[in-house]
Each structure stands twice: as structure tokens, then as C-alpha cells.
Picture 1: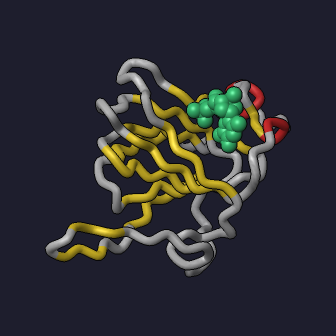
Picture 2 (picture 1 turned 180 degrees about the vertical axis):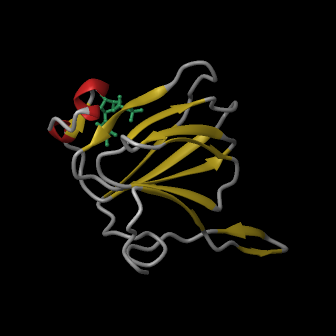
Length: 136
Ligand code: TYD
């Protein structure tokens, strides 16, 4: 897969469906455009309790709502967009230095996150003002 130039982008994932059900496979540097170092998922969320509110200096991620639905607000400093993740075959790629907010989780939703690096709290930008002025 070609390296992604955009700061954020929806990626359609191939679904293998038959009479037994459906399957989606995630492979590094194939349908996931980076080396995968970490996978985590967010569940037991509440519809009216948003999460996120940060950007990452170096981290790239793909967000997939594998069950239910949720919304992701993305801000790259210039453009603000809200993505409705409604289906497990849609991944939202988020590159470096992109502010994100996750909200409107449906009941029992599960948001899967594929990340290009290990967890490192030093790597977060948690102040929107610092993010806006590009302060690392
Ligand atoms: P937090 O960054 O607040 O979640 P969100 O991405 O929704 O804003 O993380 C919640 C807690 O989980 C916090 O104590 C840090 C911890 N955590 C890890 O230990 N490893 C991880 O990979 C992540 C993303 C969070």
C-alpha cells in the first residue's frame, strides 16, 4: 500500500463474507499503512461522554468501530471534519499532529485502534491551544 499523504482519510477494508459470517483482516503495510506496534480497544463508553481531546506528535492510527457506531471529530489545524463510523469495514486513518475527539458512542460499541507505536504519554499534545500554535 502507498504511504498516505493526507493527514486523515477513510479507508475501506475488504470484507470476506459467506454463509458463516464475515471476516476482515488487518495487515501492517498492506491495508494498514504503517508497522503495527499496538492495538487497543475502547468499550463500555457512554453516549454523552466524549473522549480523546489530544493530538499525537509522531503516532499514526487507524480507528475502526468494529461494533456499533461512534463519531470522530478531526482537526488538522486547518480543516475540521466529523466522521460517522457506522460500519466495521471503514477505518479512519489519523496521521501525526491531528486533534481528535470521539463521541456519540452507540450502546455496546467497540472502537478498535491500531497504532504505529507503543504507548508513550510524552508523545501526546493535550492542550488544544498548544496544538493550534504547533507547540511541541
Ligand atoms: P486516554 O488517553 O485517556 O484515552 P483516550 O484515547 O480515549 O483519550 O487513556 C485512558 C487510560 O489508559 C490512561 O490512564 C492511559 C491508559 N492507556 C494505556 O495504558 N495504554 C494505551 O495504549 C492507551 C491509549 C491508554
